Image (cartoon, rainbow, N blue to C red; front, side):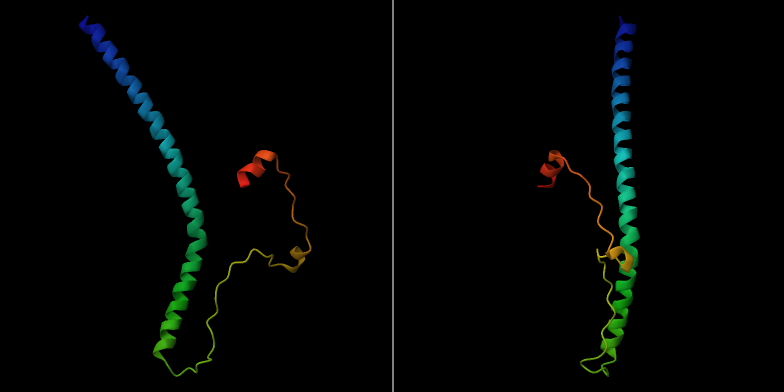
Amino acid sequence: AALEKCRLELSEKDGVIADLRSRLELQEGVSRDLELQLGKFRAVLKPFTEQLAHNLRLSAGCQVQSSLPAGGARLKRLAISAEPVDVRLEHTPAKKVPKDDTSRELIK
């Protein structure tokens, strides 16, 4: 009777352990996905923030040197555009992707 009780408790604990392991695997998968997304954002934002910091240092230097005229040279700004950079791409038609009704509902 005592042995059977111990086996029952052991099987319950094994079930809990299996459940916790599956939850852990799921969380690790989510964590990996978030790390990948974060890496993508950092790849885009790092050059942008470096340029922004450089511009701020330049503008701080310009404020200290108030010898520039009011209409002095402006700092070069960083811009991100969705327009094609290459002239040849301007005349290339956009790729049409057919959408079904469920896709259209999701977009709304």
